[in-house]
Image (tube, rainbow, N blue to C red; front, side, top):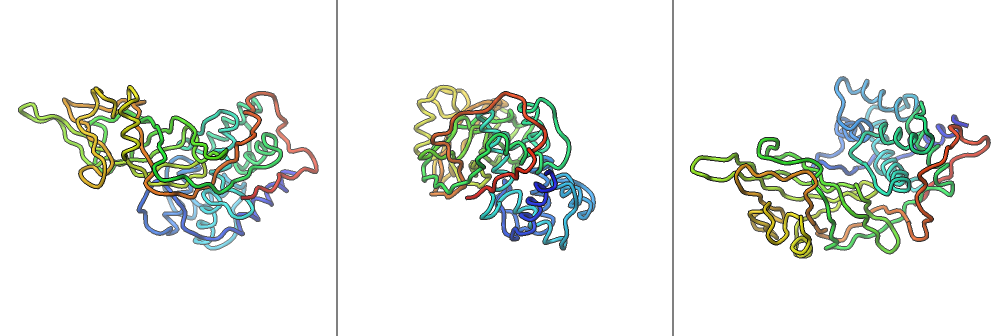
Length: 337
């Protein structure tokens, strides 16, 4: 039975088109083999690997599928990237599936963690023991037991000016960031539109550090400026965001956020194409933005993403032992958009 599961995954992998995928590195070049491989490694391992490309690709395939797959270097890497980030007309992406499994069991997602860690955490929660074998097969086993009717991705549109509340994942100071650093925030609340989950608690907001100034002589303050870039959907697609009028209104009335009236964090919050283009500036004597500090951002345009239908969802499954084997004769259901 495990072999049948693997074969279905392998067939899907080999049928995927080579196409441009999305990622946090906004503005990255077209998916060259190295660029595609690094994106896959970020999902599987949390960071790009080192060493020769053939060895890195073989490692990713073995960890994901249990074996190396045929094809040219470019074909294998582009198809692997499509399997991980895009899926096809028959099945949602790996990123979407693991996020749905996390949300159903824990009411939040953890896209920053490596895939192996995410799968192991689900196994510990649901099966008590961490299993062995190919990560894609282990995830399919979990999903088959968790959602026996299948995992379905549906198209959903996130309107322009949709507001997200997010919190900084790490403390920022002038001493631990540099211009150009990518900053991650975690979305604080699910974004559910018409009964469909578009972005989950734990999905990320990406920002970029645009200015860093250390404290200077004669009492001149330190400065950190941050510009917001994208919000991440449950399927991993990115939607441009900034601090616009609606986000600013929300911050002004929410105590503890960067833009709250009377907050000690902000020297200036600038909106629009002038200045920080929808970001903010923190100015003070060696100021910092503590981990957990909240901020609101809003989408700049209508965005189409893959969502998870939650209308009528019966609730999270968080306990109860499950067999480590897929029942004989059962094949994981085909997931469809």
